[in-house]
Length: 295
Image (cartoon, rainbow, N blue to C red):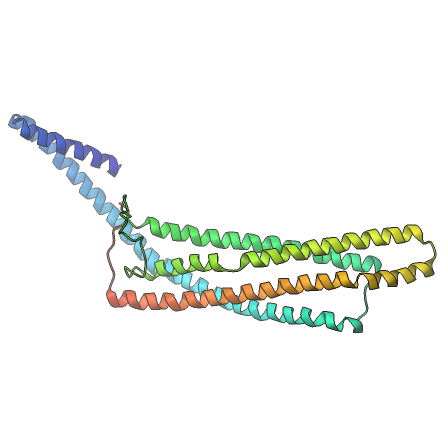
């Protein structure tokens, strides 16, 4: 509505200038001038309303949203610290488990298939959950970061010498710095490496399960003697050892990538906290800087 009023106002101003140039009668000029004054008053009221709304949005942004986001990032810092300890312990456990396999009882037949099927389901669920979490996390940060930048009036035509908006260069409110670092940090996380490791492990596990299913099917068809069947069970167990080694290697890599992802996530949130605090101090020292907001 305010944009349409501004267009009419510009048209009437042009009309008034033309009337002066053509030396129209004072009655015609006064009538146009009255319309221009009315439109100007309406524009001033609209601008005042927008500025009032903008101030309320800025107050909500700096006094409500920013503290809540700081609390969220602090909670995520604690979470990833705990996750790092947990996944590192898992990595150490699986690394040592294969070397102590000789002292354990190896599961056979249906029991092994059930264990592998359960492991396959759990890893598939974990892979999907991880991908959904990354996508949701990224969308959340990008949406809020985009909303913040929509509050800034960018020049319609950017010259080559004009640099893009930088929260640190103009000492913007610290929430801008927080989201800039958060958005950049998420993109730098090694999520693809972890996803690739999960896919490789699932592929190796499915391949091993198919091999064992075929071997057991052929064994039951060829042998009806229980004794011979038990001996071949032992032989199949020994033959599957190289495949189990491949599975162990893939699972170890998954936990290694998961540990590194947790470590990088923890570093990211600690870095966000430190830089956000530095931005807050710089903003307080320089005082609030008024920059153009969308009208």
